[in-house]
Image (cartoon, rainbow, N blue to C red):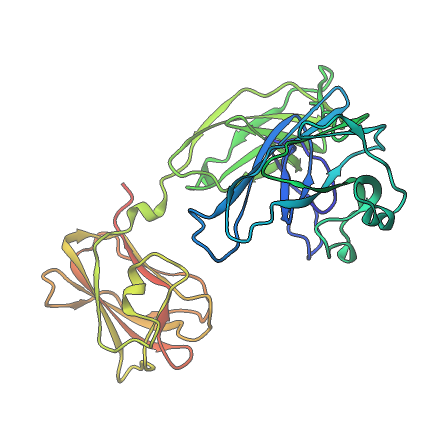
Length: 424
């Protein structure tokens, strides 16, 4: 969006650099942005259709709104833009309006023809400056330094050639508008796939590190013979990969993946390696024990209710109203629906504040829900935001009681406390 760089779709790009101000935003070829007041930014490519929507921000929009369909078609260095008559109505809707099109292009067009309603086809007049186009009723201006979105030019967004078309007021509900741009070129040169070079060696010793398979990631290793490689994962191509090891992330849990690798050298690539098949592990959250109830010996601070401990949402957190101590510990009693085999508990400190992190805690186990016995000694923790894990392998319980003896700050707090069953 900000630089005009063109990238082939259907790929994952790695090691791309952006300044701090620029969130990478990618625009699909054929897109149209509605800026309001009949102003549209077009990225023509192939065939595309957009249905724009408007209302007056006041009336019942379900019964008081208007829609306008815009179609674009690019073929043989010609761009055709069709703006259909607007349908629908809302109070105080303007029936006669001007239309402005901002069309990205790569070179100056030869001729722009217009047909509105049943009128004859006319050639639009070209103007040499934005000011003269603004004073004119109708015409176009070729701006080789157009920058949109507005306001980003000073931050470093790249100005690019754009065709600006202004159309005079017309009845938008009655007249269909057709525009033909001759000698049009924008992203016509298809980004071609790289050439397979038989001279490049086949990828050597491609393997998945079985010790690093998780629910959402896989690590691939290979023998490095070119600076970069490409990895295909279930048909999706990953590019910009250096070295001889790479971790694929954001994968689905408990899912079979098929991957292969090829070397890359400039615009040439090697043949693919043999397919490898690997399955990600189950999501650890699948092993969280459900339907747990919790009770506290101390009231919660306003807005930080006790139920937030078990909602599995990192955006919420629990906080006690007072600071616990060894003389007056805060106890949290977790009850299971039935006698339950446990594997571990994970105390997730909240990330929004340093206060309330556990420093010392005691664990007690109950097999009947009433009588509790100590489990191990007191647990000591660092005052960081890392998860606090207590192993409970081999423990079967009806309830677990945590006694928080010492914390950072003037309270106890947590984003969540979850109990896990054995990983079977």
